[in-house]
Image (tube, rainbow, N blue to C red):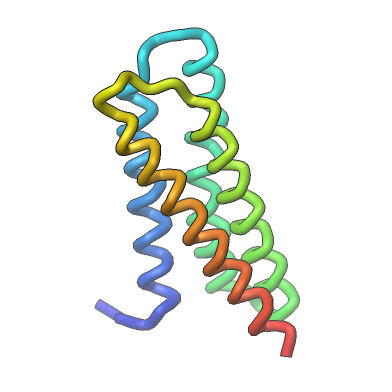
Length: 117
Protein backbone atom coordinates (compact mmCIF):
# COMPACT_ATOMS: atom_id res chain seq x y z
CA UNK A 1 0.00 0.00 0.00
CA UNK A 2 1.22 3.46 -0.87
CA UNK A 3 1.76 5.53 2.29
CA UNK A 4 1.76 8.93 0.63
CA UNK A 5 -0.37 11.58 2.35
CA UNK A 6 -2.92 11.72 -0.49
CA UNK A 7 -3.76 8.05 -0.04
CA UNK A 8 -3.86 8.41 3.74
CA UNK A 9 -6.42 11.19 3.29
CA UNK A 10 -8.39 9.10 0.81
CA UNK A 11 -8.55 6.36 3.43
CA UNK A 12 -9.42 8.82 6.19
CA UNK A 13 -12.31 10.31 4.22
CA UNK A 14 -13.56 6.80 3.42
CA UNK A 15 -13.50 5.87 7.11
CA UNK A 16 -15.35 9.09 7.92
CA UNK A 17 -18.11 8.26 5.41
CA UNK A 18 -18.36 4.69 6.74
CA UNK A 19 -18.72 5.95 10.32
CA UNK A 20 -21.34 8.45 9.19
CA UNK A 21 -23.30 5.61 7.55
CA UNK A 22 -23.22 3.55 10.77
CA UNK A 23 -24.14 6.62 12.84
CA UNK A 24 -27.13 7.46 10.63
CA UNK A 25 -28.37 3.86 10.83
CA UNK A 26 -28.24 4.15 14.64
CA UNK A 27 -30.31 7.33 14.85
CA UNK A 28 -33.79 7.16 16.36
CA UNK A 29 -36.39 6.94 13.60
CA UNK A 30 -37.81 10.46 13.59
CA UNK A 31 -38.74 12.63 10.62
CA UNK A 32 -35.98 15.13 11.34
CA UNK A 33 -33.32 12.45 11.79
CA UNK A 34 -34.46 10.76 8.59
CA UNK A 35 -34.24 13.94 6.51
CA UNK A 36 -31.03 15.24 8.12
CA UNK A 37 -29.50 11.76 7.90
CA UNK A 38 -30.15 11.55 4.15
CA UNK A 39 -28.39 14.86 3.60
CA UNK A 40 -25.54 13.82 5.89
CA UNK A 41 -24.91 10.54 4.06
CA UNK A 42 -24.77 12.38 0.73
CA UNK A 43 -22.38 15.11 1.84
CA UNK A 44 -20.11 12.76 3.83
CA UNK A 45 -19.70 10.45 0.85
CA UNK A 46 -19.02 13.39 -1.44
CA UNK A 47 -16.03 14.51 0.64
CA UNK A 48 -13.90 11.52 -0.26
CA UNK A 49 -15.25 11.16 -3.78
CA UNK A 50 -14.19 14.72 -4.61
CA UNK A 51 -10.80 14.22 -2.99
CA UNK A 52 -10.22 11.14 -5.16
CA UNK A 53 -11.19 13.26 -8.17
CA UNK A 54 -8.68 15.89 -7.03
CA UNK A 55 -5.92 13.29 -6.97
CA UNK A 56 -6.83 12.29 -10.53
CA UNK A 57 -7.08 15.88 -11.78
CA UNK A 58 -5.49 16.95 -15.03
CA UNK A 59 -4.40 20.39 -13.84
CA UNK A 60 -3.50 22.26 -10.69
CA UNK A 61 -6.59 24.44 -11.12
CA UNK A 62 -8.83 21.36 -11.27
CA UNK A 63 -7.05 19.89 -8.23
CA UNK A 64 -7.65 23.04 -6.16
CA UNK A 65 -11.29 23.23 -7.25
CA UNK A 66 -11.93 19.60 -6.20
CA UNK A 67 -10.23 20.11 -2.83
CA UNK A 68 -12.36 23.22 -2.29
CA UNK A 69 -15.46 21.12 -3.03
CA UNK A 70 -14.26 18.52 -0.49
CA UNK A 71 -13.88 21.29 2.07
CA UNK A 72 -17.38 22.57 1.29
CA UNK A 73 -18.84 19.07 1.61
CA UNK A 74 -17.14 18.36 4.96
CA UNK A 75 -18.41 21.70 6.26
CA UNK A 76 -21.92 20.74 5.13
CA UNK A 77 -21.53 17.34 6.78
CA UNK A 78 -20.69 19.01 10.08
CA UNK A 79 -23.87 21.05 9.76
CA UNK A 80 -26.03 17.95 9.25
CA UNK A 81 -24.29 16.06 12.06
CA UNK A 82 -25.04 18.95 14.40
CA UNK A 83 -28.73 18.78 13.50
CA UNK A 84 -29.07 15.06 14.22
CA UNK A 85 -30.56 13.89 17.51
CA UNK A 86 -28.91 10.61 18.54
CA UNK A 87 -29.90 8.48 21.46
CA UNK A 88 -27.69 9.12 24.53
CA UNK A 89 -25.36 6.17 23.87
CA UNK A 90 -24.37 7.70 20.48
CA UNK A 91 -23.62 11.23 21.71
CA UNK A 92 -19.90 10.39 21.85
CA UNK A 93 -20.01 9.23 18.22
CA UNK A 94 -21.70 12.48 17.25
CA UNK A 95 -18.92 14.40 19.03
CA UNK A 96 -16.24 12.31 17.28
CA UNK A 97 -17.82 12.99 13.87
CA UNK A 98 -17.97 16.73 14.56
CA UNK A 99 -14.33 16.75 15.70
CA UNK A 100 -13.20 14.74 12.67
CA UNK A 101 -15.12 17.04 10.33
CA UNK A 102 -13.35 20.05 11.85
CA UNK A 103 -9.97 18.35 11.41
CA UNK A 104 -10.73 17.52 7.78
CA UNK A 105 -11.85 21.11 7.15
CA UNK A 106 -8.48 22.34 8.44
CA UNK A 107 -6.58 19.82 6.31
CA UNK A 108 -8.43 20.74 3.13
CA UNK A 109 -7.98 24.44 3.91
CA UNK A 110 -4.24 23.92 4.35
CA UNK A 111 -4.03 22.04 1.05
CA UNK A 112 -5.77 24.90 -0.74
CA UNK A 113 -3.46 27.47 0.87
CA UNK A 114 -0.32 25.50 -0.01
CA UNK A 115 -1.55 25.09 -3.58
CA UNK A 116 -1.67 28.85 -4.13
CA UNK A 117 2.13 29.02 -4.56
